[in-house]
Image 1 (cartoon, rainbow, N blue to C red):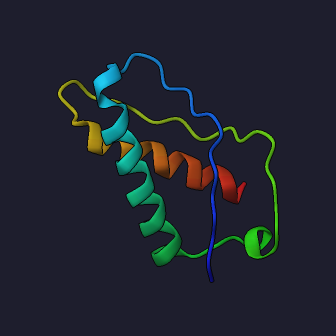
Image 2 (cartoon, rainbow, N blue to C red):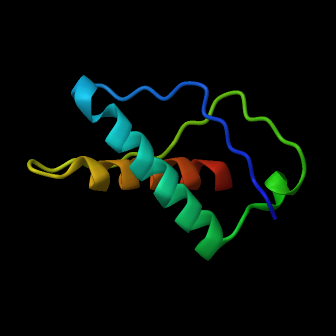
Length: 83
């Protein structure tokens, strides 16, 4: 199954401008992993649009790398899709 997920706007406060690209890549990689390993919700088996998704909360610890943060963001997004 091919999935095209378009995130029009993702708002993350408190991160440096220079880290945006790395966070984006980490989110993409983790979402790909989650969809591949854990599956696709039935609602996405057809064309489907979610106007607004309220993802779950995640914790950022001091010294956490941007890749780990991106991974947590992706997990929050993925969890929100299943709700």
